[in-house]
Amino acid sequence: MKKRWLTLAVFGMLSVSTAFAQKQQKLFNGKNLDGWKIHGTEKWYVDNGELVCESGPDKEYGYLATDKTFKDFELTVDFKQEANGNSGVFFHSSLDGTKIAGWQAEVAPPGSNTGGIYESYGRGWLIKPAPEKDKNLKMGEWNTMKVVVKGNNVTTYLNGVEMITLDDEKIGAKGGQIALQIHSGGGIKVHWKNIKIKEIKG
Image 1: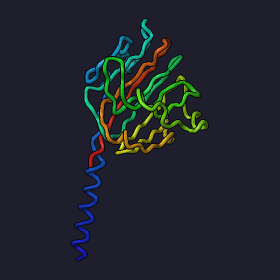
Image 2: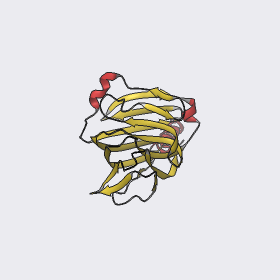
Image 3: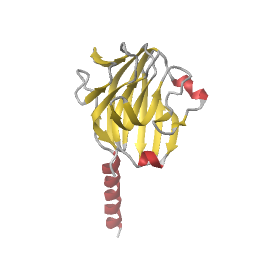
Image 4: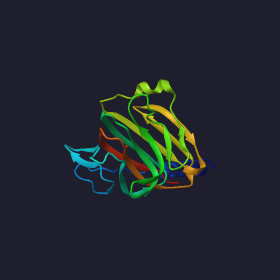
């Protein structure tokens, strides 16, 4: 009986490991934009191993979206803002030109809700971080954002600090592309690196 119990325990541990410990993938190879598609006329390019987004002469919205789609995952990305860094990381998204449907983990200058969740062409702001958490954003320096999506639940972290957690059935019902944003208005430049995703199965 004891041996059988141990066998079941080990099997259970292996099942949990298989369900959650999936291999991490690099979404950005540090060399070019393979695996991504540009939407709009704004600038996306690779410089010294970094992915850079920059406003173009049209000063409109722009997106860089993955070719692949994802459902449940843990995404990590490093970003550094120059000047007006109004951008974002979209998930469960789909694009028609520069019209994007989906959810955005905000990346923005101080005081503008970095780490909050905004639904594009939908309900707008779903949740904003508590104001005191804004101090975790290092303007003009490298920051690490982590976005964890599992079923209906979304949690964001900025530099190791939990910014928000949200339970939303509409998010849980969909999957979609990962996309980086340039906000309209001009004067925006953001550097990105170490863009990695680990899919959560089971």
